[in-house]
Image 1 (tube, rainbow, N blue to C red):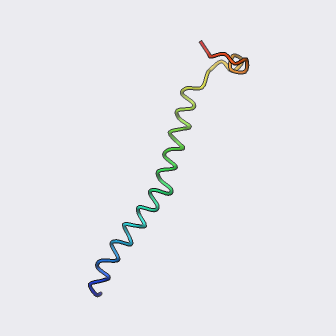
Image 2 (cartoon, one colour):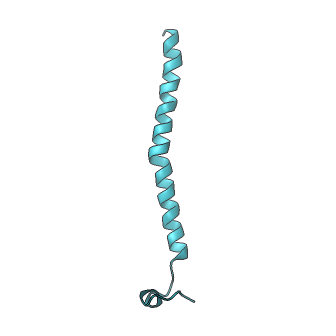
Image 3 (cartoon, rainbow, N blue to C red):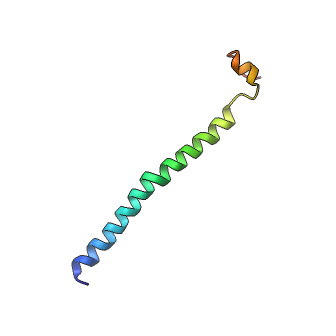
Length: 56
């Protein structure tokens, strides 16, 4: 292996990790947090929610 391979191979691998993390892992975590937050803040009284009132 020549010197350029020792430079480009780790750079390519780190770029691939960056793309996978930024394109798959982070959006999946954001979606999961959003779903968790929505469950926690959703009114429990569905009839009151349909009438447009906040649950007590």
